[in-house]
Length: 443
Image 1: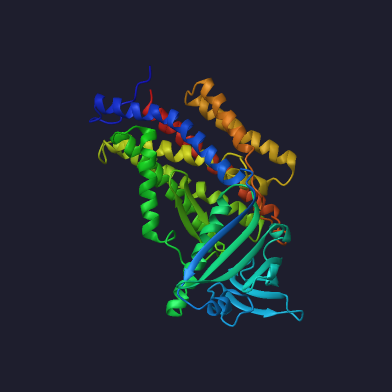
Image 2: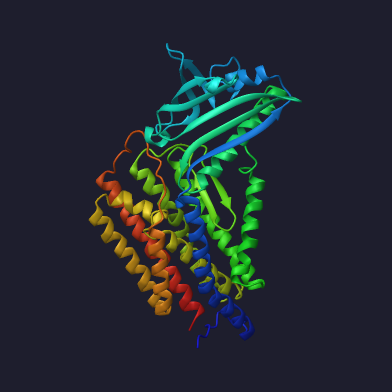
């Protein structure tokens, strides 16, 4: 039978029992959460969606000719779009070269070439386009992509119809493109009414992100028990996720991603988004590592709070809360460092170990450390086997990679050595955090 150690002179038996019940529920809750997230990740990133066409319509109080001049790349008002810096037509008149506000890996505007076909199938005010050249992405990314735009008369003005066709693996990018079309249509409506357009969306607004964080906390609460201890664990997990993503953001900013941002996804956690494509393998590895890297700096701080609490320097009741937070912090970041394709650990190890044999040895070492931590804190063999089975399934998750046009700058030996040691340092610190917290919470 497990007994919690006395965490301070005012730590009552009733409090011990409540905390013990919450902690014991974490293992089961973690398995359920991992299973749920595994299903979501497969659906978002790996589900074989195939060729799909998005079709979005919107009616405007404007003449069809005005809308046509705005949405056609060769139209007189094509410059209304906030993402378009400049455009020019080649001699044949069928290709349009555009400079966009989106940045390439070197921080320069993306150059993109469209091939235009006017009035396909004899339909007026309709054009089809496909991307034949992109300065940031390899042409294979646009191989199945095509777009059709049409302006139709409507009772109150004109109707714009946009159709985009592409091959999708996972619904995440499909949903992203749907909302991108809707955002463009809303910006066009603003321009038609006011002469100004803004592509900023409500999802990125700080207040909306705070709402999503609160919503995520409420959705996670039932997994830890609908009581005050379960709510505390849910709040701690949300705080750990935010701290982790801040680490990624700090790395992005250090590499010059001036528009890097974080998007909070209820239940699934958060995602940090850079302001441009990666420029080097060292940048990829560092930005992936800094999520757990920044969190590792807080491990000794939390342990210091526990020491001060148990010695009476601060409120004794803080010891239990500090240890549960340390357990959540260590567990979340240790899982993120696993050598799985979509995890931070997999991103780092693929850059540090370019050969297949080296990657296999490094992945085995990480998995072995995780298993040892499980044995060290007393997890049952069945739980360890179930966890390893889940990890194997997660390693099979893949998605269509976004291949850059040019290969990323390779790592120097010094960069590879520094990143590798940083990875295993972060791994060891978070493993120690789990062991320390469990030793304090359980006898």
